Structure formats: structure tokens, C-alpha cells
Length: 430
Image (tube, rainbow, N blue to C red):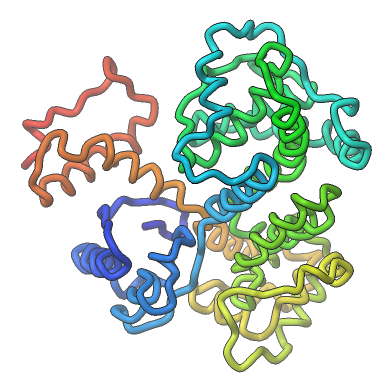
């Protein structure tokens, strides 16, 4: 559960089918007396969540007897895009592990981590090399800036540092290479982390010609297109324009094979370009003033009779995609979104050049910035339940209480270690 100030709170850990998950969520909301205050849902786009008839989101809305705004996890969507690119480069496999990564994990102890080779234009095909040379320093600068702020997970920091390294830069804390970890196919980021590491140590780790060529296709896409999108995904106000830009980058990517599979995959998840969500770009500082003027005009345009939660675009028409702007997706329906979140829109009476100095705009910006468009908190909760499930108690009520205690402790003591802070189970089960 996340409020409009961006504060997350663990209410419970439901699991099971769509029906079971929806019922458990309603029960949690009722127990916390929040069932009448929920206006949106953040979720992974799995069938158990988004199914038209038996998905948890559908059933939850039926049980609450009202429509909720949909906020699918942008990180999860990007993970699906990464999987599509990886499958195109390396081929599909039904096995739980990736054999190339498993070989590299075994060989890690024999690799000299002081000898690595960044990517250069000579490693790439001419069409990809031109993109690489035009944006590599820009990506290095962006990743370096990201490292100035705390990252929610160690693998996020690792991906930023590896991206800087493979592009020929030096991370702020120097060159550090973490021992390769979990490589199961369900761990999406492993594809990027392993891929970059293997490429950096390609002169020490034996690769077939096919494997090396696949890496040369995959890594440029990861570091120049995927990583920038991933690390901007958490911003609600940047979501509409960011998703449109990402789609345009995918459609126009010079490797036709990767462009085709990734743009097709992402085109199925254009939730944030819907009439309801596109208005978030009014608060995006990266959107030009002239574009915001067009958006204000578009707010007075008639909407479709039944606006869909997702936009569907013809990605085969590259020219049309390239010419799209966020204003093209806004109608009068976009106002309903802000009404539901009680966002004051009086600043629209002024020219966009005056918004930044308007206290109503600043107050509204604070509200919409708190909207959650990623569910990393839920993923950390899954890890939490895996850590503690069946560890201290088999009683479901006591387990849920224990999770509340641990979640509170982690929120108030994020840097706690085993020596610094302990939870006494005997006093936690009151």
C-alpha cells in the first residue's frame, strides 16, 4: 500500500490464484479500514493479475464495486522487453538455467578481475557502432549521476557500475566486480549483469563465435537503450513521455531483429499512454513548454465513448510512431484521473511558463509524484516472506504479525546488520 506522499506500508502478503489474491487484498483493506480509500492498483502484468475475467485486478474491482486506476509495474514491463531481446540474441530455452551463465559462474574464480576490456566501436557492426559512439558518454554521465543517490538494491548499483565500465568510463568507487550470483531464468536482471561481465572478460572466458556475436548484439541494446529506461522507470510524472520515447527508440533501433521483438513486446503494455494516465506529463519537467500548451488544449477535446486502459498503436508505421507526442493521447477523460486523486488543476488557467512558480502547481506536483508506478516494494516483500516463511511460526496470523514487525524494523533501520540490531521473537508475538 502506498499513499500519495510516496510512503509504502506492508498490509499483508496474499498469494494464490487471482480469486484468492483479490479476496485476501480486500480482507487486508477491510482490516485496516482502507477499502474506501483505494483509487489505484500497482501490479505485475501476469495473467493471474490482468486476466479479463479471473484476474486479481478484475475481481478486486468487482468486490470493491468500483473501477480502480491501473498502475502496472514499469520495471516488470521492462523486464519482459529485456527477455525478448535476450531470446532473440541467444535463442529460447525451456530450461531453468542459462548454460552460458552457468559456465561463467564456474569459471569466475580463475578470471583476473584486473584485466577487462570495455566495448569499442571496433567490436560492433557499423550501424550499431554509430549509435554507440553518439550516446555512450551521455549514458556514462547519466549512470554516474544515478550513483550519487542511494539505490534500493545492490544489483541496481551493480548494473549502473557495469554499464559505466563496459562503455569505457570509471565508476565513482572504482572498478569492482561482484561474484556472479543467482542465474535462474526468473531473475530477469541476471541477463544484463551476466552479459556485461562476460563481455568485459571475453578474452579470458572461452566463447564460441556464436556466443560472442550474440553478446555483441545484446550488450549495446542493454547499455544504450534498456538501462536509461530502467533507471527512469520509477517516476510517475515521467511515465507517459518516457514510455513513448522508449517505444520510439525500440522501433527505430538499428538492429532490425531486436527492434522487431522488443517493440512488439512493449507495444502490448502502453498503459501510461492511455487517456487516463497521459496527463501526468503536465508535471514532467522534461516535456517542452509548447508541448504542454498543446496538452492543455487537448484536455478540452472529446474522448472516446469507452476509453481503454491500454493504448494500441500500429508499430509497423514507423513514421507515425516517430511523430507522436504525449498531447496526442490526452482528452477530456484525462481530467478524471486528477479528480480521482483530488489534484487541484487550477494552475491550468496560467501559461505553462508560470507553472513552476505557482503554489497550486507545486502542491499538485507533490501529490502526483507520490503515485507508485513500480512495485519493487512488493518484490522486496516477496523476498521477506521467503526469508521468514515457516521460520519462526506456522500460524498464519502470527506470521502476518511477524511480517509487520520485520517490515517496520527494515523501514526504520535500513542499514541494520546481525550485530547491530536484533528482533527478539519472544517479544514480537504479543
